[in-house]
Image (cartoon, rainbow, N blue to C red; front, side, top):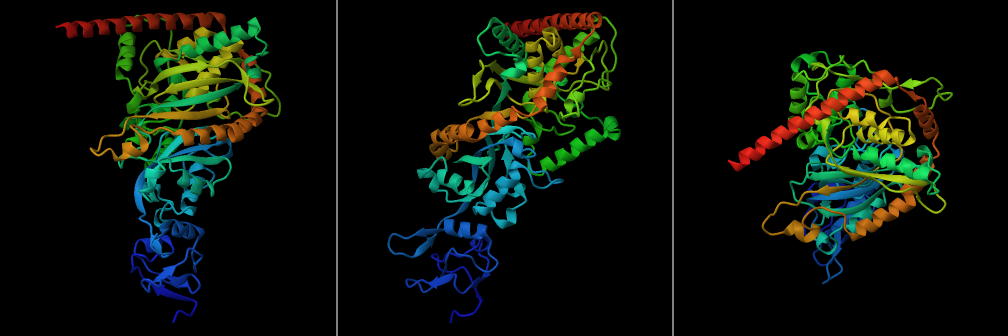
Length: 558
């Protein structure tokens, strides 16, 4: 009766476990004659989780997850798999990939490419959803760029899983283990946790914390506790402290990508803007509208602003001061500044020997072609620099700089650390960095290498109450990495990430960057004028802010 190469079966008895994800939706498919057996209890055909004709390894994996054992008899039963929204904590070594996000114009080579393949191989997504992340509600907390690592990035999606399994395993350790079997050593799923159906990893994320590891040698530290080392660390921390709070960081990114585009400027958009818009369109295919407004060390969406970090009042203060005409001096358009630091450093046949003069200008009047947008303003919660210590047994001594903020623009952190390192070494005046945080200032700042930037963690807002506390009972009041996930993260850091960073410390890019910083020069007369304008603007801005606060206080008393 059951002879032949294949036969067609349909979904019938609730105990029938059909191989392949298509059958879970009630479809039919041919199976090989050695992939089934008859259930003596119900006389129905039970397909074994073995390879069937045309069946992929992913089908086998999901078939195995569908099968459970009835304690009353040995008959396998169909597990109650359903789509549920989950948050996946993932760690990875970014130098092995071309960034986190899938790039449709250049398929393959990103973290999401291998993660999606692992989810498919583990039977966690349907074959009809493979390659279309929008269908499973995919979102990411931080869209890291090429070369940037992560210890706890978060992606959210609708996962094919047994919802009941999270009651006994709230951190999804078994699911994480199933996924990790199909991932390379450079990528590891730390935890899989239930979240509410409306959860969006980007919009729910309040702050992101990045770590940047500086080899002691790039700071000129002897690591001997000498006064010279203490002085350099003091300058490094003093410069970092300038970044805390809300500032216009337009000089720390490609600011044209964050301007508000008007109809006129859109017609004459440059090729860079058009490419940014194309990237934004590709991103929008998988990002919800809420995600498109926040950019975390990632390429921005052209023509949009950052809702989470916009500060229109700061922009109005700038305009008020400029219109007051109390700033004197010469200015002009600043797009002519050659910001070669924005390009990724590549090794030259020989180290440069010609001086690299500082590039800067000051806008005495508002330039309509180079106006700041609310998205240029970012808030840095805190920034700190640890004393240099080895990253492991016999490893290079490094200074870990920690930066926490709501969001970051493209290259922002790397320019911040590039400036701080240059100040600590004595290659850049501290006043220059302070001036660069003034809205009328236009300046080119050093760009630190990307190889040692790590997304260390995220903080999320609380889950909304559903009246029953279902999600809260499994994942807590808000999403955070649990004890098992933290242990997995620390193990990945020690065994995979830190050794990779140690190797990256030996990269030739550090010698080139060290050489370029040494060649920095500036003209004392022009520089003094620039600093004086910046100091005058800071006084004017403080006066405007004080007057505004006084008005608010007066209104509150009335």
